[in-house]
Image 1 (tube, each protein chain N blue to C red):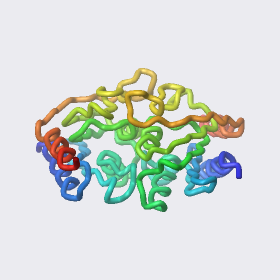
Image 2 (cartoon, rainbow over the protein chains, first blue to last red; image 1 turned 60 degrees about the vertical axis):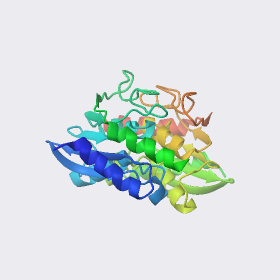
Image 3 (tube, each protein chain N blue to C red; image 1 turned 90 degrees about the vertical axis):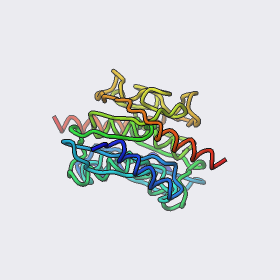
Image 4 (cartoon, rainbow over the protein chains, first blue to last red; image 1 turned 120 degrees about the vertical axis):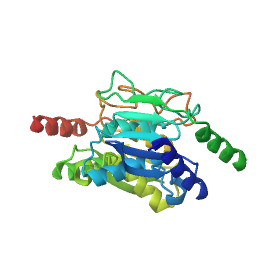
Length: 144
Length: 144
């Protein structure tokens, strides 16, 4: 199964709701545990990014705040809050669909996932897809 | 009203639940909008830090994800996730009761709240109280 395509499918759900189109999928043993799209405007909740919602769902399903053996696929480079949440739940592998030059916290503006001063290190795989960045570009173009 | 004392009262609620004792209070116009303690173990939710819960509550009450005109009082220096959430909701002033030399993201390990590359800058006031750090020290001593 193509997990980034599934994350992109989530992003499209967000787009239809008028949200910044970002989707995230959490996997374990090559199966999807949880998935979500950004719902910040819909829920009027500044923490309701796709990654945070997916993490909360996965923890609820696994009845554990530790997601050590899980991976995350996300269509846009996580912000500081979401990268921090990935550190908190100890997700081991992160796959990212597009760079965020404005607020990306996995290397673009700052890299909080690979800081030797912190007690957790996350593997980052750049799995850049034109469709991920195109969807965001189109969204912001339409907003102007 | 002493808002840090109120945050400390929240931390004590967390302590009684067996949580790492951290409390947070969000204010606007010198009044408390929301308050919370860390509930990570109780809720089995890695995002359920005091700051995140307080932000979600305040946004729900104000029906807005933007908390520009709010302040936050927290008994321990926020981690990367929580500092990132403070950036997301644009809280303007943060008062911190104790340093976190292991994971503090407001100057101790990293400072994500005052980074010129990001589009929001948060004022940080260190309002260190012996009671805030003593409660945490005692908690971790009892855990060993």
